[in-house]
Length: 547
Picture 1 (cartoon, rainbow, N blue to C red):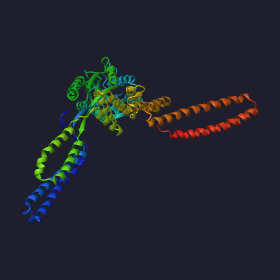
Picture 2: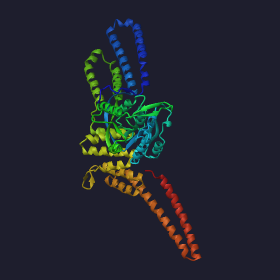
Picture 3: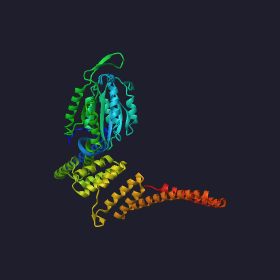
Picture 4: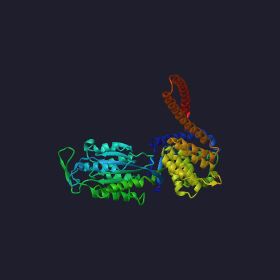
């Protein structure tokens, strides 16, 4: 964890205005008390000690209730400070291509002047995309600004169409701002995605606003690897600027981009030691495309850590309750008694602070927290909790429950193959012919059955629901789904039987005399009417099925 008050933020700052009325309300209460004191001046002399105690109680009670209100306002405003690292399991890879389409990319200095830099980018990216099947890809155009041209997709056809059309005329913004292109690419990744994210920038490094350094630093803090692929020649060549008249000389800024990568990596290592998130490769260097593909392979199934600010909502809620309760207690005791108990109260507040700022949860508590996040559809947080238990807990039974929770979360995210892999790693212990943990074993078989139902394999799902019932006969859901699977399988057999009978009867018509054929025709019509009625009833039942 970094410095306690680093990354200070307020989610809803407009709610802080609710604390303003505390001042006029406190002044009004003091004014009314002074008026009451004057009206009772004749009684004060005879009971000055009691009235002095009443005055202290009144002002302390008012002060504590004001603090309670301010603490409640700070709680609902969403104040956060400090950071923590959370482990996150990544499955799959998402890549954002950032294309520099500024006029400097029209320089004719690639392959001894045979191609412009932009033509070389088109050839390079087309070859790269041909080896990236199954990878989610987005495309960002950057010139004087950055725009998301194609959102993340596994269909590479629109990406290839955009690559063929790359030209400075696609954007009217003037200048070259690589930083805005990278910022647009960072924002294009979904926040709750379980995929590993990375950015490939195709450019000559020639920019006009010097925004590249800050954008690379932001990507590094988000742990999004950025690889800059350089195109062009360091010798430089003349090219026409945006007005079509003025010639300017442009170079491949290779040294600049290397220095930027080293500088940003040095700063990012303060947060994530032994990590190089920013890389530079020259497109013409041997194996440059292979190095990009290797990055995708390494991150397709991995663990990473995310930095998140720590919400202090609970901290201020606890203080609000403490101050509110104290406002009642203070009016019932005198100051001497309050002083006697002050030391105890300080100890209580100190313990509250410790439990607020320090996380000391056991693995079982972490599993419970992950289950609550899963029920509340906070799947990203649930994955973090379960993965933390899998990494830290030596208890095999706790790890099994964490693995089951992780598999259930992937089912909710519709990543069925990953969920099956996680469920297959759970091997409940047996005591003779029975499982030691019947509920866990039954739940594992039940979830596997649900996955095969969603895949349309009702036969395999039926067998798994039977295993779930054998493991725990009290599993009512498994019994219901088993019955539904058997009905679907029975319906499929009846339909195939009806089709077969119909074809046999029709084939007989050509081998009988006219009178017999007429009799067969009558029988066939009666059978067809019966099948239609059965199909109608089966269709009604089918519509009632619900997995």
